[in-house]
Structure formats: structure tokens, C-alpha cells
Length: 591
Image (cartoon, rainbow, N blue to C red):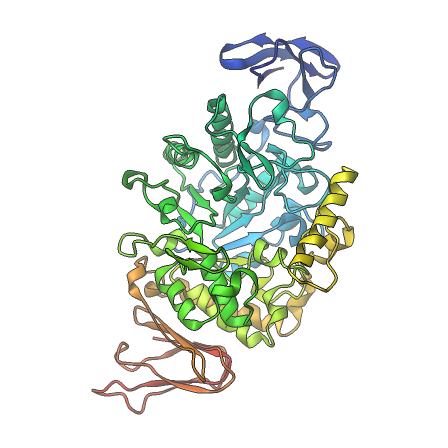
């Protein structure tokens, strides 16, 4: 058996590949590429590249397998060796789906793809349609969030490597669950990143919070763009993934006529047609710009969906009362009403936190609701709190958590849960790293403390480098056997089942959602979606709310977070004066 080795190194005068213990001179190819065929270097053979007269052996920029860590040699991986069983899987559309964000390393005590696969039946019973994995591209150390990945083509070995990821995807597809992967194309981690040794992968023409930007529009950028687009296609094609979530696209600078996101979107559409599978791209952006999800034919980037931070901020602040940091413009129920009906709260309005106007309005008549992901918790909003505390720990009782879950899962957007949210997990999810470079490790720990000191935080800041910080973040599955966790799990299951069984709750038209809210002495909100209404009481005092004439004949109570919730139908008739009685901090669904 033989293997073909190729690498892009446009500035090199000579490139060798060290395969096993033998060094082979590579042939110069067009456009800065080098290549050679090496016999007896099939699946499992270790290799690396040597540039010019250097003696250092570098891993492959497109390494498919890094079994010994990010600094060591790469290993040949044959994708054809894996025996897939998902031949009849054709994907799942994003519209109508419920997503579940998962970090492989803390989802189970074992922290592997295989252990996560053993918990998939829990997600099926919950009603989840797609799992969104935090980044799995190889990063330094054993554990971390994954956003400092340096080998973008190689699944993290401590999770189970390439075969482990394939087994997880295969198992998910067998249960009818799609798999989405979080990918990071705005920067690479500093520890083990050797792309700059091979070519102009980065440019000082643009800067990011992490240093020089990825080179998407300067000299040599054609191959860098191809590197990123082909990486996206590789995950979807070779690992049978159903979609990608692209991290922080606002940090990607590209002044090309065709933006890299548009180019990637076109390529994914073509791959979807070729494979006969549903594929989609989800962007994370801080810009509140609907052009991301506007079709390419209409001048947009053509992403299938984007995260909606404003919905999170509006719902979180309404539930918790927090107003610090970026929550300063949120908290009122009128703000939550705007997030539910207009998507962006900041749609060209003044942002106090930013000190400027921010965002652009969404065309509600033309943009379907499923193009925006709503969430009450996610890895950023939990993990970037000083102590990694979840919202269930902040709220005074699980009752308000039920209110938040109902508004999340029955809102017009594509809902996403963060792992453990469905049972009100009490375990924190902290920021943790495992950098092997002592200087970098110290800088991360000290930087974390300085960051929260500037924000006036006086409590203990968990050290990201301490292994205990990581261990505290692992889900405690035994909580499922105790209250209130079991009750919260059943509540989430019921909400998802209602969403799936009720056509009006999957209406893609944003214009079909209306909201009434009162922020005065009592705090209540009623969200109508077709003939279904979610009536939420945020305050401690009981309220009696008019159901109105929208439901005929008499409305039925479909779900209630409190057994005291009831419908007063005595007044039903020509006047349509039915009313819903809500105790404090409760939510009822009727229709």
C-alpha cells in the first residue's frame, strides 16, 4: 500500500516528508504545492513535513489524525475503512427542529464520543432532533472548550479521535438525530499552531482579539480560503455531519467581493445536492445583521440560520433581574416582547452597552422564524460568568425556570437547549483549559482574574487551568433521580411534544406571533402563536388574564406549570371573555 502526501508551502525551496523513519523529497507542484507518493505508508503510518534545511518535523496542516497531541507527528487516516450503517439517513431539516448543545468532555464522566453515544436515548426521549457539538478539532492538552483548536481536520484524540466521532454520528443517525459541529474559522489557538510556518494563513492587515487575522482577502488568500471551505466540506462529507455552527463570524474580516461565508454556503449547497442529504450552516454573530440569513440571490450570505443573542438577553434579564454588562438594555417585558416579535432588540437602536447604535431590522414578512436560534442558556452565557453558574442556580425557584423553558420552546425561533438544562442541572459549567505551555497557562489564569476584577467581581474565580475546575463542570446524571430535576425534565419533554404536535407552533411566519405584556405592579406576558397562547406570570402575585376571542370554541388548557392554573370559561359566548388564572411565577399554555 502507498499514500499520497501533499502540502501547500509556497515560500519553501524544498519540502520533505518524513514517513515512518524514512525521509522523502517532495516534488514542486503548481501554485506553491508539493507532493509525492510513498509506498508502505498506509492507514496508521506516522508522518510529518520538513521545510527547507530545518530539522524540525512539523505536523500536516491538514492532518486527519493527531493521536499523540498537537505538537507531534500526524498519522495517515483512511476514511474508507469505517463501516457506516447510516446509508438510509437523508438528514433532518433545520425548520421544526430542537437543538441540544453538548460539550463532549463534560457531558459524561468519561468525556468521550462513545460515552456520549450511550446517552443518546435520553435525548431521543426528550424530543431532541439535532445535537450541536462544541468544537472537537484537536486542541492542546486533555480538556478544554475546544475554541483553541490548532488541527482543524483532526478530531480530538482524548474524545476518541476520528473513529470515535464517526461512531457517535452513526449512533445518532440510527436514532433519527442529526449532528451539528461547532467550527472556528476566525482564529486558531496559540499552542501548537504552526500554519504560519507553511504559508500566509494569517495577515497583519486585520487584527482580532487573538492577534493577526486569518487571511481571507490578502495575498495568498486563495489557498487559505480553499483550506477553510474544504475543511467545512470534509466534516460534512467524511464524518457524515448534518450541519456546522460557525463561531463568531463577526470576527472574520473579508473584503473580497464574494465573502468567505457566501463561498462556503455555495459549496455546501452543491455538496448537499451531490450527497442527497439535508445540510445546513448556522452562524454566530454579534452584529444583529439579517444579511447573514438573507438568500444569496437577494444579496445576503445565504446562511441557513444565526444565533439570536438578543432573545437570550431579553429572556434572561426578565427572569433574573440582572442588569449588569450587556444586560443593561434588557429586562423589561416590553423588551422581551420586541425580541419575540422582531427578533433583534437592537435593530438600529441605541445600545447603551456599546455606546452606539447597533443592528438592522429583520424583514419579518420575508424571513422565516426558523432562521434564528433562540436559547435560554448556552456555553458562552453560562461559561463566561465568573463562576460558571447556570440560570437555575440564580433563580429563586424552579417555577421561573419553567416559565423560561415554555417561552423558549414555544417561541417562533429554532430552540436550543444547553446540556443539562432540561433537568435544571445544578453543576456549574466553568471556563477551563489545559494548556501545556507554562507561560500561556499562567497568562490565561491571571487574565481571567483581571477580567472579572475589572467588572467588580469580588468572589472566587475558578482557575481555568485547575483540573478541579474542569471536573466540577461534568454533568451529574444522578440528579435525574431526584426532585426538582425529574419534574423539570418532564416539563421540557411535554413542551417539546406539544411543539411537535401543534402545527401553529411550527408556523414559519414571524408575522404570526403577537405578544401582550404588562410591566407594572404585576408582570405578565401573553404570546399568541396562531390559536395557541402561552400565558406567563413573572411576578409573585396571582393574575387573571383575558384569553380574548381568538380561540373558538372555548379554549382548552394544554399545559400548566402549576396545578392551580385554570381557565375561567363562564363568560364564553358572543363577548368571548374567557380568562386564564395564573398563580405567581407560573405559565400556562392554552388553545
